[in-house]
Length: 91
Image (cartoon, rainbow, N blue to C red; front, side, top):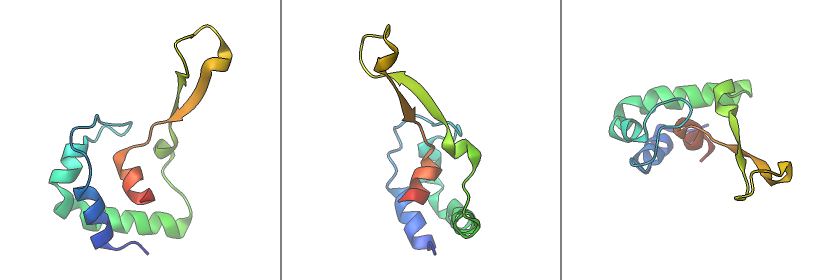
């Protein structure tokens, strides 16, 4: 079980100057509204754990070049870009 204190501490430790990820929620908003959204996120995380599923948009991945040589297919690897709420739940 995830507690509200755990979620709140992770939200307050977010770097507010990072870019918004796939869910378009800016990290600054999560940090500034940590006390208001903590109960909602805690409930959501616990239900997600109990169900054994995570939202499909948390599974997004982009294919980025591994080196400067973009010609060779061997230089590409999957990079998983996850949203801040997903990162909070993982921690």
